[in-house]
Image (cartoon, rainbow, N blue to C red; front, side):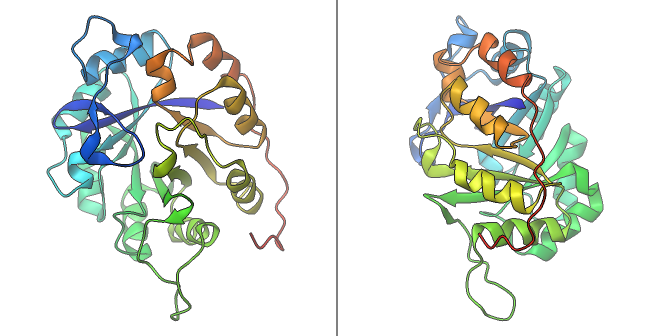
Length: 263
């Protein structure tokens, strides 16, 4: 299973996310980049690569997600370090997605929080190709962060149904991200991982929010998760290179699909 370090970017700085309360985020002070200025995203990306031996990096462009201009220049610098970037920049249409890819994003995240419709997600997937688009199932304490309803006026979709609709629209993968758990150490909800993996066995499945231990990462790998997003535990040193290498060696199993699973 891959472990993907996280960079939350605001105003050109890497900030430490906690509980989705963006107004409280402050520049990261990390044990990985001792001597570098607080919040230096390039120093942190180099540490992810050189110290943790991670090739991937998840980037949340908080400026763009909250309605500001995307930080394309900074993304290009990060990509220039050899990072394979998975980027959420509040993309809602093909042109923005293509600009993000041109800036260096290997995969573009379309987040439930900012997505206007599944048709918009489908348009992005057609523009970039399914394999380059990941749907972020944005939750807060398990509740979807969306006003989208089910077709035909049947009310709000469940998290499992939202993931299915996103995959049907053309997304190649699903990222489960509960903002209330971010930075909390509470960890990812394993039952949600199990339900998603069982129902959608062929989709790329990622999760993040509060991951804090090697034991949890190993458990998530055993449940079939393809990749876990981690931030705070890397900066504090609770998770280090030895832990990540052990987790990388654990293969994500692929259970048989049960079509009658209704969760």
